[in-house]
Image 1 (cartoon, rainbow, N blue to C red):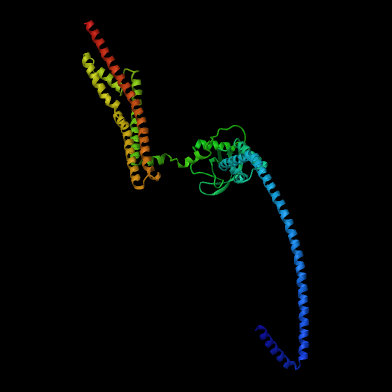
Image 2 (cartoon, helix red, strand yellow; image 1 turned 90 degrees about the vertical axis):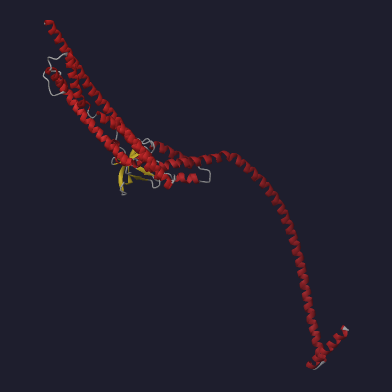
Length: 449
């Protein structure tokens, strides 16, 4: 069936073609020509395929040979790689074994560098050489083993710090005054302990590596020592050394003066001061009076003429009663002594009372301060100690003020009482001597009669 369809199609095509070209011969020739061309094309393509097949076979053979070579090379490289891995692991083990102590050394060096850097940062020498710790900053942050040069630099820096701590040097530096101005001054550094300029002590600020002049200064005698040291260039001179490297000097800023201490005592403190002033005035008045009275009595002992003094008035009583008996004279003399006692002991009772009141007032101030402290705790809690400082200060200061006032007043009372008692004892002694003298006169009169 397919053949019949093909023939019919072919005949139809041939008829159409014949109609177009007019003759079958022309058609046959054209068909043959076309068939010959197609045959040549098929042969050329077959030759090309055969050539490509041979070429592909050659390339395949070459690729197989190269694959074999690469496989052989891969096996050799893998064997070499395994050998190198074993060698590297062995070398790593040897490195770990030999670098074990060096790793510990690295840690020790970093720790020492950190400690030395802290010392250098807080040292007064850094005010003179502010950039000398750069190498230390690098060394303490380093992740690698330190080199010999780094170790030498660390060693030399420590030796330099030790050497500078024993030297007194002068160098120009920028100073921040207590008014906030920055000025250039010549600074005298005493080791790593103190720095002074123009007789005033300086503090070293770690953050800015600057020297500042604090508002609070040591006592004047220490400032005079600093001024004397700045004026000299050789020899041995006395000078205060601050072993805390400025911490003690910083306390002078926070340490209140006498006026502030008195203000901390509050109203009770002012009352204690008033008691002290009254007591001192009484003691001073009594001391002057007793001193003048003792001088008059001392002069009276050298003369028989009665004067205006306690002993003179006792003598006057004796001379005014020449004819009385001894018992009456004794009574009169006792009466005269009793009259003198108020003048001798006046103010001593008040002085003793003030000496007793002063510590009681101090105790009162302590109680008031504690009450204020508890009130502050109630309002602000215990988180901020400064809120309780006023009450605590009053409690402690008033106690100290009361004791400071009471102790001298007691001593003055004891001193003045002893002088008054000595004077009273002298008057008693002289009155007894007058009675004895009268008794002897009366005895002689009786014997003569």
